[in-house]
Amino acid sequence: MNKNTQSEDILVKDNEGYKQTKLGWIPKDWVYTSIRDFINQLNGFAFKSDEFNQQGKGTRLCRGINITRGNLRFGEKNEMFWENSNNLNLDKYLLQNGDIVISMDGSLVGRNYSLVDEAFLPLLLVQRVARLRTKSTMSQSFLFHWISSNNFIRYVDSVKTSSGIPHISAKDINNFTIAIPPLPEQQKIARILNTWDKAIAAQEKLITEKHELKNGLMQQLLTGKKRFPEFKEKWQTSKLGDIFTIQGRVGWKGYKKEDLRDEGPLVIGAKHIKNQLLNLSDPTHLSLEKYEESPEIMIKINDLLIVQRGSLGKIAVIENDLGKATINPSMAILRPKRDDISVKYIYYFLCSDFSQKLIMSETGSTGVPMISQKQISTFKMTYPSLKEQHKIVGLMQTMDEEFSSLKEALKALKKQKQGLMQQLLTGEKRVNTH
Image (cartoon, rainbow, N blue to C red; front, side, top):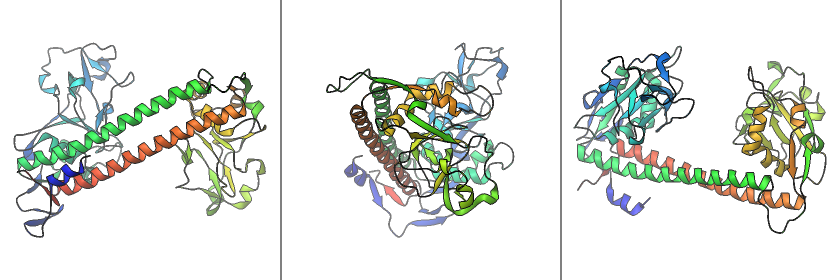
């Protein structure tokens, strides 16, 4: 972001010339009203779902499932087409570049919205999706920033249905109330916020590129296709069961409510592993008596935890002393038998795309996904000497640190943009239109 340019564009609010509304204090020359008179809204056509096709015949459909926060998404599983027109006049349901689409159903109602990109056209609007186009008195981009603001989320949360599948109506959208400055100021606000969006998009693209680079390098290094020049030794092949003891609560149905405590030994489950890292922001505690029933599954430093049931593919290394801690029935502990194996190396091996696919291939096709300790023990892996393992781990950790820094920078950009957006959209900070 060019902060110098930004500071020239934004004028600090003075103490006069403002009026109070339910939104807060806004400039007196702004209008506080619903968006009803400033937009043309259209709800999608009720296409017959049994006449959809995935072969690309006809026109692509824009359904609620295709809308996520700020983006449209189309893939093999959610991309549908409509070929059978049956002499229907569907022209008005054809979307245009820059249209705003909002999913009106689902648990994320109010959070799934997007601008339509020309790359996806032609595109037909489907039932339970709203299309918004502004009239000449409002900037389309300005409206989109209001739809993408926390104000819209809070508003939708207050009006959506509370029973069954949450949904909002066309009337609910029309009644969304905002602060509206003169058109030139709308356009300037939109341009400033668009600049931030471009910076965020560039950071997201960089993260995606780094992620793909890391995954590709992991696959090459962890399979020996790419090696450091100083290492020449032949790699070994073993089953995980030959390298680790594998412990879990086999046959244990779980703890009862009365076994849980506000404090005490930790119980680690799938919910405590996020992005393949241990996250204890929402800890679970067990009674000391229940914890001491199974000394073999008391967690130690250097243990590798893997989810056996439910959220398969989640893995974490215990790198710090957790004190008294154990696992719940969905987990297993892998504890090294030998000193020529780096647990962190095995962790990266199991986190790799090819290992994750192997884990998922071992599960059944019905019911809750599960993988047994016996299945885990039979996984084969090829590995180098301990020194080469450490070298690979060091490179992976460096890439992880870089990846983490990029994500933190993205998080900061989004937070800064949200703060600025709130100030600009309410007139707390004014823009210079001259």
